[in-house]
Structures are given as C-alpha cells and as structure tokens.
Image (tube, rainbow, N blue to C red; front, side):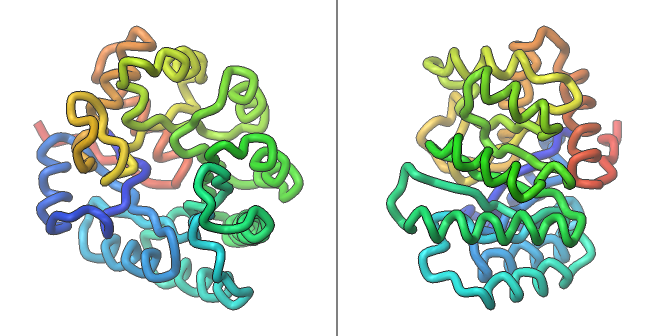
Length: 260
C-alpha cells in the first residue's frame, strides 16, 4: 500500500467514505488528514476515528494565524489528545506567498506548535512557502530535530535539501513533481536519501498530471510515487515499500500490505 502522508479530507468535495474506499481500492493507505485550524483539526480527528485507514494531524496553518490567541494552542493540545490515531502537529509553518497573516504572528504560532510537537513527542508537519530562511531558523532555534520533522511539499533547492537532511528531517513531494516544467524539483527528489523520502497529494489541491487543474484525491498519490520511482530508477513496488517504511518511521504508523 502507498501512503498519502498529507491530505485535507474535510476540504475534498466528495463523501469521505467514498474517497477513502476509492483510495484503498487503488492501493493507497493510510491517509493522514491534516488540520489547518481548530475546526479543521477537530474534523481530522473525527475522520481518523471513523475510517480505519485514516490518521490525523492537528495544527494551525500559517494563513490561519491572523486571529489566533494564546488559548488556541492550549485548545490544540487538547485536540491532539482527543483520539488514538493522532500522529502529528501541523500543518504549521510560514507562508510569505499569500498575505493573509502578518509574518510576526505566523512566526509566533509556528514556534508554539514546534514546542507542542516536542512536548507531545509527535511528528511536525511544516509548510514553507517562499520563507525558507525564516523557516529553517525557527526550526533550529526551537530544537525541532528532537522530534520527526516532515517538510511538506518540499520546494527548496539542493543547498536547502542538504541543510534539512543534515538535521534529520523527512522530505515530502506532491503533484508538482509530475509537472512538465518541474525539472528542478525532480533533480532535488533524486538526491533525497531513500530513508527520508515521503509522498503526498495535498488533496484537494495540486493534482498530478494528467489531472492537473482538477480537484485532487488521495488515490492519486500513486502517480506521485510512480514519478518518484521513475526519477530514482527503481520499480513501482520498490518505491511503494520504501514510502510505506518511511511513513511508518516518521509517524509511528504500522503500514499493512495490500491483500493479494
């Protein structure tokens, strides 16, 4: 089974049970559904309790930090303890591409969530969009390497890759790795050590080819995995086994094999 380490099931405009069933039929499991604010995180936990292949991450996205209060982190900690299949804090991080929250508030929220992940011993899922230097600085200052860090939809260059790898972070790729003009991203993906590589969809966003521009679904992580296999010169089965093992390590999830 190929894991989808990053999806937003509450934002997919299809019935969740059907989405999960279609993913399983395509050989995709587990799915980690990601919270972007308190309400979304509660939904992620609910989905993890309702569907066997689904696990949850709870967090406050940088674009949702403008109105965040100190009490929201306390509430997030409560949510993180509210289910047995919650495996990460996130997504959190910095986003300087969209002007939806001041940088200072984003940084404050990011630091608080790194500390929460360390406190709870959970993985940390990091959103970094046009904010590489500040993201790396905060992760270092907050000692994020004391837990498992996942760089969601990695967009850095080879130099940044070497820095995150030196810290022991995991590196995840999504649909853009399949786009025709993503040669730079494919070169970076070829450099990731086998034990630090992850795949995701970010559904309903960033559909891979040939579905680019359409709402994404977890089942399409197989297309991302197939492209990673092609880039790295391994078989699809070898890549599936690799991604399953790494997902298990990063998030503490036992990956079951597909029944034959």
